[in-house]
Amino acid sequence: MVREITTCTSWDLGKPSYQAKELGSLLGQGILTSNGAYWAHQRKIIAPELYMEKVKGMTNIITDSAITLINSWNRIIEVEGGIADIKIDQHMRSFSGDVISRACFGSNYSKGEEIFRRIKALEEAESKKVLATGIPGMRYLPTKRNKEAWALEKEIHTLVLKVVKERNEAGYERDLLQMILEGAKNSDLSKDALDRFIVDNCKNIYLAGYATTAVSATWLLMLLASNPEWQDRIRAEVIEVCRGQIPNNDMIRKMKQLAMAINESMRLYPPNTAVSRETLKDMKFGGIHVPKGVIIWTLLTALHTDPENWGPDSYKFNPERFANGITGACKLPHLYMPFGVGPRVCLGQYLALLELKIVTSLILSNFSFSLSPTYVHSPTLHLVIEPGQGVNLLVKRL
Ligand code: HEM
Image (tube, rainbow, N blue to C red):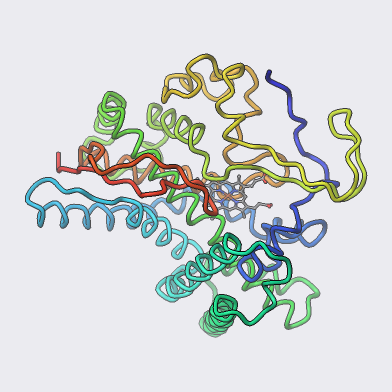
């Protein structure tokens, strides 16, 4: 039965603090896990940089990163003699990491990449720790994994502050790092707290936007490989709209079938499995008394596939259902939430969608692809839901 979920618009609901504890040095006190006035302060600084109008200005950055990917596939295909079996996961991660490095660090982006390489290693070290133990207090013991994570954390801290110092000396640049710096300067934080604020938010933005976007692109390509009629349909649209040119904002806006396929792919494979909230005080929620400290999970995969809301074909890839937008796709459109909901809704959604549209349209206008016989369908939950054994595609040039 479809039951309405009360949209979270209340300050009395926050992000579960356990996330910060479990993921330890990975998240720190950045926007993803903080609550109350400190969270609001961070959101106020970061949000304007990721509004749709600002994101439109990042089209060139994204296109450059997508062209790097296209060139690398071209080289692989040439070496393989016309058709290549490509494991696309790492390519999508490089693309998404490249975009975030450029958006955050502007001209310092190669240093940004160095920092993000370490954040990624830290993410891996932390996710192994979470999965391996789950024992309270383990994170304080000097185990091999903890020591590895602590060393990485220290390196990240030092590197970010080095870029900040260089930036302060070199002058103004309009990127996310600059906005975080200015926001931090205008607050009354101590020097140490200020440094933490900057470092934690660099880590948070990277963690929020890197794997999520990469995995969304990977699932979308897997679905287009398995549904050649949709692959052809969207390719025809892209070719008609772009007429051999690199897509610009105007062209991207016209790619309706592509937008429908992205919505459908994120319905079936939302990278984040759940949206969670913690009650910060006793409250009534949908008529139920919920005491302070209770964590409420909203499972996206369940919401996104409920046949009562989406119809009997709810498990089928059918982008057509989004022909009239999200409101036309189901009975209760607010239950579609790949980017979360309410005041804590994803700040990077416009950036992520633009990335997905640019990279997919460029791939479709350069290559045709099908699933490799080596592909094994095994959605697996790490920090996001990803293909457990990767996605191999057989790719050839058009
Ligand atoms: C397809 C890619 C992405 C997906 C599926 C996604 C999904 C989400 C979800 C589900 C949330 C939690 C929302 C809630 O609790 O209601 C979130 C939060 C957030 N996302 Fe994304 N995200 C993506 C890409 C990005 C990108 C590219 C960035 C930034 C560069 C970003 C930045 C953030 C931030 C800063 C938050 C925390 C917002 C807050 O707590 O106030 N995300 N995202």
